[in-house]
Length: 388
Image (cartoon, rainbow, N blue to C red):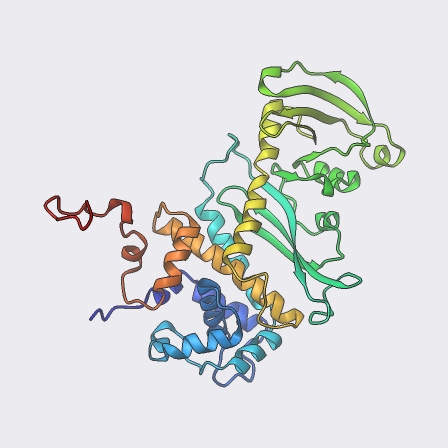
C-alpha cells in the first residue's frame, strides 16, 4: 500500500502558507475560532472547486466519507455543513481576495517570459466583465433589474499566461466603463477593450499615464481626418488614419490625435474600426492585438464551465465573494503548478485528473503525466479476436 501523501496535499504545497497566515491575521480571520480555522475553510472550498460539488451538504458528505484522510490533507476541524456555511457568511472575504493576489503575483512572475500572439515586449492586458445571474429573492443585495439579480466580475487579464491581475466584484448595475477608474495604470502597457469602455475622458487618463489603448469605435464616432498612412489591403487593413475628434464633449475630453484603423475580417465577414493612441505599431498589429482580446472571453467561459462560480453555497454577499475569490485562487494555483512542474497538458485536462485523484496517495507528477490511452502499449498480435 502506498504510504505517501495524497495528491490534494501535494497540490497544496504550492500554496505559500506564510502569506496565507498574514492575510488571515490582517483581518482577524481566526478570532474566537476554536476548531474550524480559515485554512480548514479554504481547503474545504478548494476541494469543492476542484471536484465541482453541488452544495454544502454535498461537500460535507464527500469529505466525511474520507474523514480518515483529512488530517493528512491539512483539515483539522470537524466538517459540518452549518460550520462551513457560517464561515463563508461571517469571515471576511478580503482574506481570500488578498491571498488570491499573492498567487497572482507569483503566477505573473512565472509566465512573464511566455510569448504573446503578437510580437511585443510590453505587457498586454485585456479588460472585460462577465455577468453572473442570481435570483433576486435569494440575493436581494445583488441589484440588477427590477425582477433579476446579478453580480459582475470585472477582470483585467494579463495575456501572458491568461492570468487575472485585477478582479473587481460588483452588483449588476455598475457599468463597465466605471472600472477604468479603479484599475492600476502601468506606463508602456497596452490595454485592449471593447467599445463598452469607450469614454474619452478616461482614455485620456490612460494616454497621460504613457500607456496605450486599443478599442473599437462606435458607429456615431465623429472625427476629422488629418492624414492617412499607406496600407497593404491584402493584410485586411483598409484604412489607417490619424484623426482628431470633432464632437463637442469628446473633443473637450480628448484633444490629442488618435489613430483610426479600419480592418476587414474575412473569416467572420465583418468590418471593424479600431481607435488607438499608439502611432508606431503596424496597422495589422493593432488589429491582431484586438483579436487577442478574445482570450478574456475564453477565460470567462473556462471558469464558468469548470469552476463553481455560477451556483453558490450561500446567499450572503460575503459568501458569494468568498466563493468567487477562492475559485480564482484555485485557477491561479493550478496555473502555478503547471508552470513549476513544466506540464504540457491544458488546465482543463489537469483539473479533470485532479478531480478524480485528490485523495490518491500517488506522486503528483506521476499522476499528471501518466500516458494517455492512445499511447498505451498495443495488444498482443497473437491475441484472438472475439468477433471476426
